[in-house]
Structure formats: C-alpha cells, structure tokens
Image (cartoon, rainbow, N blue to C red; front, top):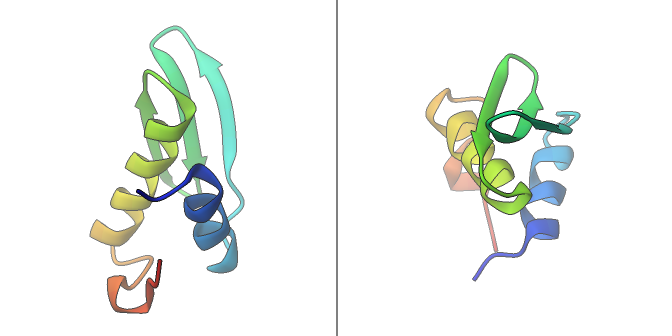
Amino acid sequence: QISFSDVMDLILSKGYAVDIERCDEGVLAKAGHSWHISDDVTSAVHGLLCLLIKGEKIDPKNINF
C-alpha cells in the first residue's frame, strides 16, 4: 500500500504545490489546475495524483514506489 506521505512527496518532487482544505463535500486537494474532492485527505491526494497522471502532468513511467 502506498502511504499518504509517498504520494505527497511524489507530487511535490514534480514541482507541484498541494493545497488541502476541508469543504462541504469532504476534502479538496488542489495542485495547479487539477483538483479532487473525496471523503478523506488520503483519498483526495491519491485522486489528485491520478488526475495529474491522466492529464500528463506526471509521467507514470517515472513513478517508483
């Protein structure tokens, strides 16, 4: 299982600042123009990573956990 800190470190190492805030729908994680809302902070940041990969902001070939 990949930890919250592993995912945060990966996003930060690619030059993205991550904003995390609580909202009415749950937890919002933002980086650049990408954002994801989920029930908890770990899921929100994991979803954000997935969006950054799908948007080709982070190359999945360069991810080593």
